[in-house]
Amino acid sequence: MNKQIVIAGLNHRSAPIEVRETVAFEPAAVKHGLSRLLQCSSVEEGVILSTCNRVEVVAAAADHRAAFADIEAFLTEHGSAGANGFRDHLYTLRGAEAVRHLFRVAASLDSMVVGEPQILGQIKEFYHVARESGATGPLLHRLFHRSFSVAKRVRSETGIGSRAVSVSSVAVDLSKRIFDRLENKAVLLIGAGKTGHLLARQLRRSGVTSLMVTNRTFERAVELAGKIHGSPILYEDFPRYLKLADLVIGCTATPEFIIDAPLVEKVLRERKQQVMFFIDIGDRRNFDPAINDLDNVYLYNIDDLKSVAEENLRERSSEAAKAEAIVDEEVQGFLRWMHSLEQAPTIAALRGRLEAIRRGEIEKSFSGGLRQLSAEQRRAVEDMTAAIVNKILHAPISRLKHNPEGEEDALYVAALKKLFDLESKE
Image (cartoon, rainbow, N blue to C red; front, side, top):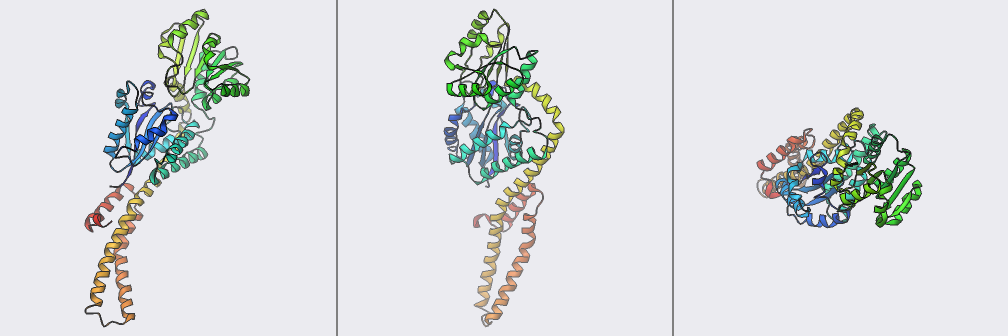
């Protein structure tokens, strides 16, 4: 059987964040995860994607049913407590659907915020980890590089990225809705990675003047605070500074909650019950959801940003339609390349079969009734019989090479294999 592209996973549409995070991969765990993934007998190549919006396994496999079962078992084994519930939210895609899905993800058409630029960089990072781990082969190598090109086309040929937005910008938009004005509000930003840098710059542009930054690695907090004229806070000290913050934003990668309800309850007493807002956009939730049960506290997580994101999508719908057309075109191109992988050995086997018949009959004739032929006459017979074989092969080979409908291609290949008994000869 020939390999095909398969994808199994969860995203922000199929599962809430509390389900997605049960099977999410910490960055440091992806390489080990790939090693375990390739131990699945059905998975021949694989890439793990794990972001705040999705956890997906992209694989190349000969048997898609076995691959889906193995990937589900792999995610179950990897998952944390309560991960069993993810099965109800798991989607599986194969063939053209899987190729289209990855192209749409890379082009930011499947993002919570359509047009956000961060997802392409994330996909490239996960692909590079898989490649360096030896988890990718020619099929996924071609697939991912094609997805990068698709994203570039969409970005350059449509306006999908104009007035570029991201999850971080949506978080800032939400902050503006929460407060009439941000100029007089104190903000505590937990996390100084790429998202933290984006948030800090956008908060500054939105008028925030009091911005505290903390990070597990203090040097990174100092670096970011220096760039945006903020105040760096030691990570172990940030709970003491919570009472100063009107808005707390978490965007750090951590496997456990860094702020729980009892801590916030204590902070509220110190603030004399002055209202606090929390926005949680960590890959895994940074803040205990029980915080939202407290009076005078409002907590928003990544899934709560959907309503803001949907407004952005409506504004970009016409550009998104252009982008979808590009994706459709690129999917057909990739499928033609995949079909050619199956065509080539079949065409070679068919040529070999007919050439073997021709050669056998020529040798029989040259040693029998045609043994008196001169060398020149033998060449003429050779040329004539070779021309006959080429004419016989012309129609089926042309049909395979120039078949515009990828779906029919497998039927032609299967028919040729059956009619000429090619399976055992490849």
